[in-house]
Length: 216
Image (cartoon, rainbow, N blue to C red; front, side, top):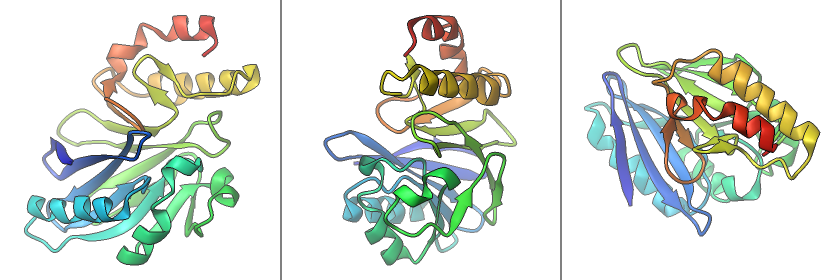
């Protein structure tokens, strides 16, 4: 079942939960131009194509997918990527250090700080190293409200992503999340994770010391 998460001034954000892993799929749609960006074609291509079609209600322009972004290379986030990319003819993007682990060719390798323009809105890639080498979060800065951050499996309510008990990977991801997310963005930033419910940076900020202490 698709859900209209945010009806913002310039874009809408819709979401869909797919698969036994409760993967979140997101689509951002420009109200003025119909340009769309899909985040994580995780599974169930027909349902994802339905999500894209539902977003036609959010604009008077004809919708079209400009880019499909994969937040990281893990299998549960890419199962529908080939089929959705073929159906939409959209370009694909993923973190540069994850490209070799994604079976579908990546048209746009993302590096930290890259900004893409999509006929009505811009998105910034934030490289968060640790869950996978090339994991990225995608930042939308709403000019009239809180920012929205799509974090894949790098940041959830209650903690950062799984680093398989590896202290070096944990330290890398924790440091990136602190310096590249919490130190840069305000508390009202809305976090849209790769699984489960969302949160805000303000709701999580007070727990950072606890996360560091426990090591996961």
